[in-house]
Length: 199
Length: 198
Image 1: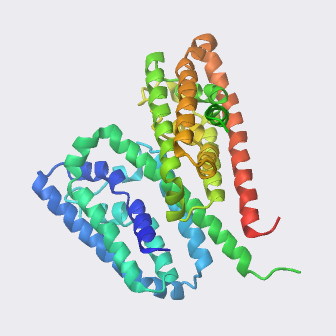
Image 2: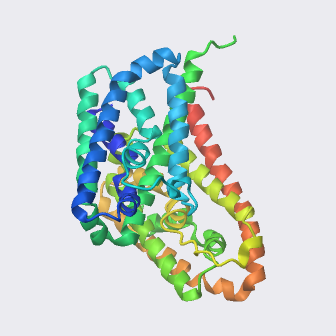
Image 3: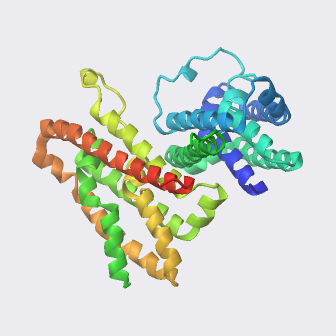
């Protein structure tokens, strides 16, 4: 995969447009300056986790005795369920009841920005990609764009309106479904190609 | 092929008349004026998607490394989930005032109107025809027809009444499930070809 397509996939999974409204409602008690500070801090924490996962990926593969087939199928399934949640939102999501106080790490950095889908994806790509520098560059590119979008969350929300945000969210959800199903089916293909055939 | 032939094919694939009852069942909680507004909006989204795929479809799908079987399969899975929702919709809490579900983009604009079939067709024709404008105008002509059908669809509700609509929802849930499995089977057979089995 090229650098650009990795970056685009990572950006789509971070889903900054879909996260704008939830992040703004989580931080609505603060003035816009504190809000931006919180968002920037959470983004930096998320970046740390992403980079850490990029390097730890191989190690986790080894400890849990995973291979590319299993990671492909499992990350595809997780991503699929996340995308379903984006498309069919329910008002009583478990994310509704949260600990009071300033959001620190949970729930903005993890799981809204750097969720299980993103972590599994980074693990998978880090395994597939021979050059670590490409991965780091892709993560940074996706992160910079997401961080910029979330940093200007308020003006973007005012510009697009609730409906515009919803449209962006839905489109991203659709693309995520495409990516996840493609990944699961590639996993199945890999399984078929690697397991010993009865002859 | 002439523009009108192309437009006719696109109209048939979009299948507005067949989709009418399902679409009406999906938005039955709204008033007629609202329904027309929603349907107009959704058709515009469908048009935007179709034109987006005409111009950038190839780049978009190959950039994300999405194959045609995944496109077909995703449409099937989504429509299947929606059909399950329609068949097993909860009737008991109808008295509770709950926010009306406003179907935004999913499922009417895509995958019902601009589904995997239409999008791949458009990509195919844009490859075949030298002139992209021809396909563009064909889409536009087909779209006018589709929108006309869609906007008149809410009057079905007047004929059928509330009970008729509730019954229709069940029936259309079944039809949607069948269409969904059709898309999945299509995706699966494309997948098998990609695997090199069949």
